[in-house]
Image 1: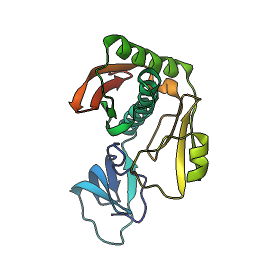
Image 2 (image 1 turned 180 degrees about the vertical axis):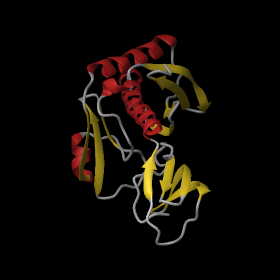
Image 3 (image 1 turned 45 degrees about the vertical axis):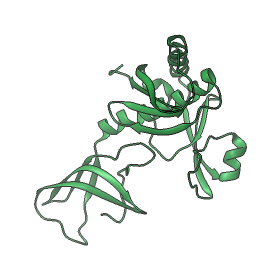
Image 4 (image 1 turned 90 degrees about the vertical axis):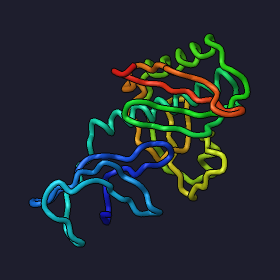
Length: 212
């Protein structure tokens, strides 16, 4: 545990950062980062030297892995907006996984989704990627965010000040995660599986960029 850290702790479906903590004599390889209340725990293995309370460490995040995660997180927001546009506004998030290799999105949807609809959803996401809109984050109070039209997760507890993430006029959501700079950074979006996982709940898995 550090007094402050650039590492992202697993939250909102986004996996925790990896990397290393190092001093002149010690190297700690961080394999995962988790939140414990307001504290971030760096989980991993001491590769050399020793660690002690009060020691100063240089924290180095695996930037290539984080970049892949950020692209998948931005693609998840585009997918959510596309699902609502093609299937209806009853669609809302029921769970997600954002990793460096894949994105998984669980959502409320009572009926099966046709191949035509899946193609429309995928095409709409790729249209937004090609539009190359800037991805903008703003800190504002919760009421202002609602006025702006930001989607919030039902049942989630939010503080008075929230982070609003917008991608052009297409997607506006409350989100504390890591994202790309522009939608075009995602490159290409491809749905690889879709199906029911429970009554009224469906799951879509997708890849982006080089994986797509």
